Image 1 (cartoon, one colour):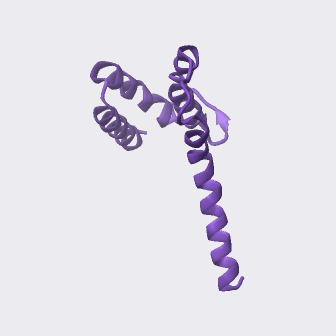
Image 2: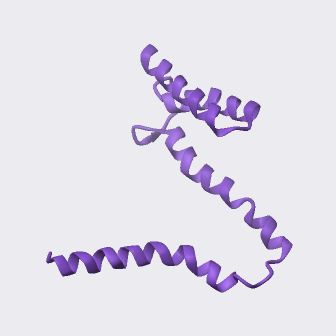
Length: 107
């Protein structure tokens, strides 16, 4: 790959990454979004977080696992409790990381 091809590739990758983020602002920037749509969109972050986190918690070595060897699953329980109690991401991450460390040290 020549230097020109490399820079063209980097430029196109930047455009492909940037366009989906900027396009909605360009299209919807001056329009009023209905309250129903805004309400529906408020659930998107929760859905995305669930779609990202659940597979990594429930799948162990390629299979759905509820065994003692699935440390991510068992560490998520105290992390979830910390999230519900504190309503803050920092203690949640600390409790989750500490739980993983303890479980990997014990099992």
